[in-house]
Length: 348
Image (tube, rainbow, N blue to C red; front, side):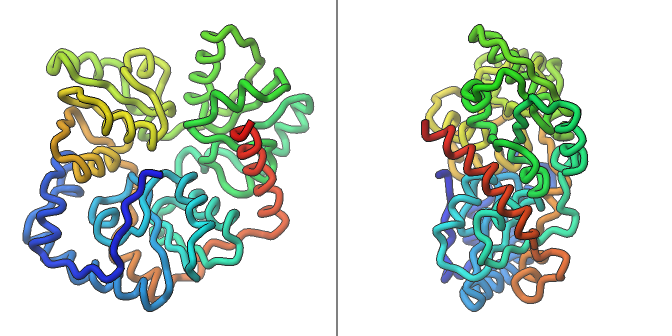
C-alpha cells in the first residue's frame, strides 16, 4: 500500500512544515506554501493531531486532497479501495475519511462497527452521483441476462444492486474473467470504452453496455494538450488514469490506477512527467520525491479540495449528523457481497 503514516505526537513548527511542503510547484495558490501560510496552518495541524489521540481516531486521506492534510494530519494516504481495506485492521473508534462521500461509504461497508465521518460538506462526485440504485433496478429489469459490474466510484446503494465491484487496477481482469459475455458496466462510460478496447486487443468479444457517467476532472483532458506538452518536452512521460478519454490513453506512455501511477513514477528514470489525473497526485509525488520533474497543467476536483484542515478539526470535535456516514444494514450486507465478489475474482 502506498501510504504515509503521520506521527500522532508530531508537533509541527512553521519552519518544519514549510521545509516539508516547499517543493510543491503545481496546483496554483491552493497547493503553494509560503512560510506565512505555514504559520497559519500549524496551530490547526497540531490541534488535529492532539484530537486524534484524544478521540482514538484515525484520519484516512485520498491522494487528491491538499498536501497540508496528507502530510500534516493523515495517518494513511492512498486510493479509496486500499484505504477502506486498511481501515479493517485499524484499532480505533472513529475514522475521518478526507475524500468524498462514496469513499467514506465504502469504508463504512467494510467497517460497520466504527464511526465514519466525512469532513467536507461538498462531498459529492460527478461520477458516483450520475447513477442511483433506482436506475440500476430499472436497468436490471431491462437487461435481465447481463452481469452488472460497478466501478468502486459508486454509492453503497448502487453497489448493493450490482453483482461485482471493480477498481481501476483490476477492472480489465475481472470483466475478462466473468463467465457471462453480457456485461453492463457502470457508471464510467470512458473507462467502459477503454475496457472494450482492451478486450478487443486481446481478441475477447463481450457485449458491454455502458452508463453515461463521467468524472468531470478526467473528462476535461484532450489529446491536443498532450501534443503541446510533448512538443515542449521531448522526453516527457505521459501518465494517465483510465477514467480519461480513449484518445488520451492512445497517446499515453502509461495508464493505471492512482497507486499504479505512483509506483510507475517512483520507479521510472524519465526526466519529466505529465500527469493526467487530479493534480493532488502530482503534489503528493512532488512531496515524496522532490527530484522528479512534473510539467503541464493542474486540474483540481472541487469536491476533494473542499476537504480542509478546519473541516477535519470540526469532524473530530463535534461532527454534524449529516456528515456521519450511516448505511442501512440490508444495503450494507448486499454491498459487502458485491465487494466480496471482487476479492474472489482477484484471488483466482
